[in-house]
Image (cartoon, rainbow, N blue to C red):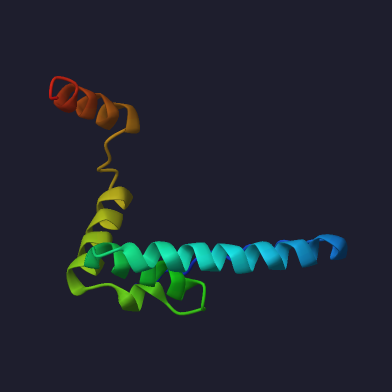
Length: 101
């Protein structure tokens, strides 16, 4: 089973493209600086997957066997109607963590 992201096209007026390009360079620099400070391997792998998605690679292939199985199991549960409503989950989280400090 493979999943693909949805591409979004954004049309930018010509007079704004130069400003957008400058902001893109600044944004890349800022992201690079942030990544340099990260030592969490899981976070770095998640960032790698996100970035590779933008390079037209199939993020599904980047997942471990366990991650693929977990996603497939979740989809099967969803298709079978075995779901927990968001409000129920939120209530359980509030109960579990509201008394802890």
